[in-house]
Amino acid sequence: MDTAELRTALRNAGLSQYQAEAYVALLQLGAASATELADACAVPTARIYDVLRDLEAKGYIETYEQDSLHARACDPQSVMEDLQNRAVQLDEAATEIETRWQQPAVDKHMLSIVKRFETVFNRAEEMIRDADGEVQLSVTPEQFEELKPALTTAYENGALVKVSVHCEQATKLDTIADDEYHGVATEVRHRDLPTPFVAIVDRTGACFAPHENSVNQYGVLVDDYTLAYVFHWYFQTALWEVWDVVYTAQTAEPPIVYSDIRHFVQDAEPLLHDGKRIVAHVNGYETGDREPTEFTGEVTDVYHTSVSSPDDTLSFSELAGQVCITVETDEETYSVGGWGAMLEDVEANRITVEAIS
Image 1 (cartoon, rainbow, N blue to C red):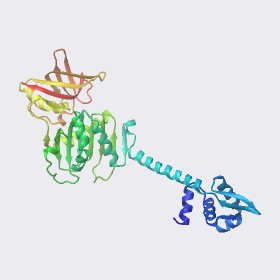
Image 2 (image 1 turned 90 degrees about the vertical axis):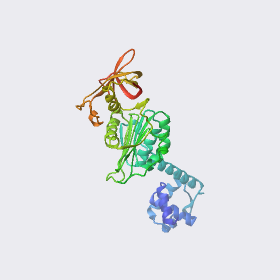
Image 3 (image 1 turned 60 degrees about the vertical axis):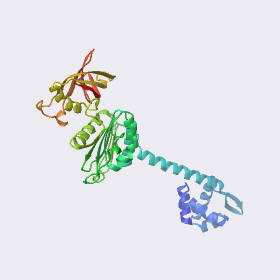
Image 4 (image 1 turned 180 degrees about the vertical axis):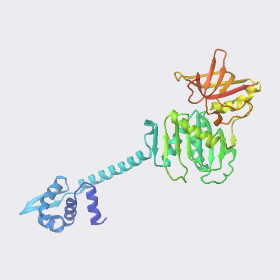
């Protein structure tokens, strides 16, 4: 470090320009009168006495009388300790600034806009690892590999894991062996177009970031039931429904698990029209007081506002209006809706078909 850099460092440590000039000059001189020191540095003679008093008060120098006012540098140990403490404090402050910028307190906000994709990705990983209901995820193959440990944990927790895999460029995906998905995902689909990073977890949170070629780079963190529903519809209609299934852990025979009532109705309505009897177990919440509930009964009816004929296979978007089913148990008859249900008795977050006869 040269003399100019040393003066700059001392100014950053709290000395004024004149104080830094005088102290560095005094280190070189060892001891000097006030006038000699003023001649050796850029401090005006009229200011040198005030500068020396200030440096003495800070513990950098000591003054003494010898025909005139003289000064000499103090043992630098205390100065060194002060500078080292400042360095540690500044280093800790830099680390804290980086932490607060990368990891905003999303738990206190329904919606947060962030700058870095890493913030979005890390938040999604945390949410997925804690999931026990449903994970809807849009990722590249590389992101899928990085999230596999968290997805495996969610799968083992009982979550239904739906993954839409896409390339960063509009190119065909390489085939991934089924064993790469086994124990990690419930169902996987491939999309041939670049797609944003999306994660919707347990109906309560969502993470979104545009794909890397987007003009605007930002991230959205959602911690709200209603806002997450908006991302759910985007995922289902744009990233899921129309793309080919490349892996599924589901079987054609019961038990068959559904996390969305609309997918259940797509499969169940033709069976009911054919006179089949469907027994299902429903997990969800009572719409009145949000108390958890579960029951098993026969699905006796489905209702939706689509105008398609009964013989048509309904698309997900055609079921955008009210959709509900009627389930009769030995004790009671329930009307069951899906995410956001208000008119029905129960909002289902999982429907498990136990028997079809």
